[in-house]
Image (cartoon, rainbow, N blue to C red; front, side):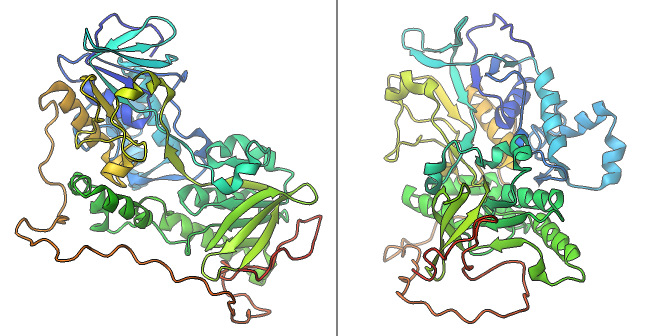
Length: 495
């Protein structure tokens, strides 16, 4: 919608940021009688990961994980109604695909964002204040301030860059996957490209480079510290960890237990889809028909952590690496790096005026209750809610689109003080918590086991030569020279 703001203050709920999650809340609120809502975003239009709308890339969730359907399938902002409006119901029916193309999901969200009357783009909220006398939030926009009884933050997450790449911040040949499509033309002159990260973004970028740089002699490398390129957990009972039932169970666990669990659940939310991994293998298989595997300038290096990245001796880039299992170190020389290293929650600067009124935890994170409301001091009585900033309190379902509509309905019901949307009492066959009659443990549960110290000397089995039987390299490679600047080994064999 346009930039003109309706004069309906104070709003019952003001949304900051319009990504899929706040857009879901806006769509569900659109039919909520008696509630005044407004959602603002500084961008001129809705954009959903534009740098990753790669040809052929698909969603990792079914189409029912749209803005509204898992709460209200009769809602006019559903994906099926979008298809009806686009006259695409029959093509979608015959496509028989549960997962949408990423481009179609982006277009669907833009379709809704452009039509919802409570969405305003080109409206940046720069500061958030609390007015105790009026018991209202005052949001500064650079023009007319907005007032609201409750605020929901949907500002999204920011690209995460590993500390090892700090020295290359701003380098023209090192950038995050969020910029991939915009920056891909800059790779035209690179003859050695490294993708770092084994999640879905890393897999999609590596596959795209395999397709677009096939046969031109460019060396493509996929490097990740994960020990294996394991697929995303997609079994039916396994996926029940993305239900409201599991979210409630996870929220009830002690904080230290939650913090230990999240890294251990990486295969639920940080792995690549089995379909994308299969496409990579199929592509490599077809490329090497009639040729030895080693003839292709392609390397897949799991279990390899980058410990330091810097400019190389002759204009390229040098990555100091450590093999996770053996502890051996080696250097990789390359010309360009794409960091498919995920995203992390950031605290928006607009909270600075009320930061002293928020009850932060020991690590400076939000304390978030089951209704996604942030804990605040007694002087701040207005509801402050967050979306996709509560991974540490609500678990791996926080960034998952499949739980977006349910979370939006929970927030909307809490703001309204009534059941605007009826939600199911149970959503999983699995019972995650122990029975109420269970006895307390007699001893504290043991923490997760840690790996044994790496020995000073590691003997590796001899490499099978000259044949190669896999595309992945499971042992640390000999240092790879820059295409135009071969040099001596760097730290080979030093743990």
